Length: 69
Image 1 (cartoon, helix red, strand yellow):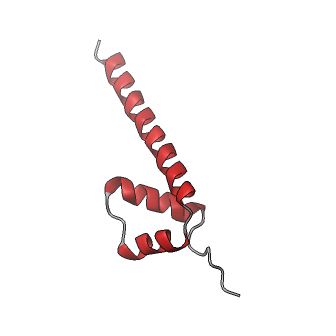
Image 2: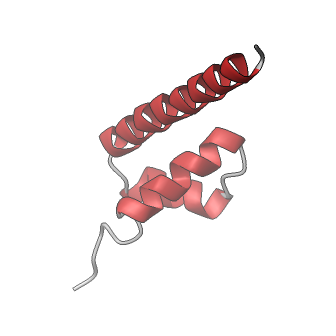
Image 3: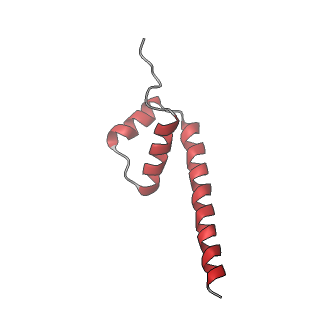
């Protein structure tokens, strides 16, 4: 029996979301995601990734502001 969801596990979604953030997603991975992935997984992954990015930028700004005085 062939697993239809092969390649869309947690780490594949993380890899795809990170690749999308920097714009280097390969054509093969993009086709795999569209063929086998569920959109909600990528939406949630993107939202979590965006929240982590914003939090890191906020921490960096707070650090810079605290060391500038």
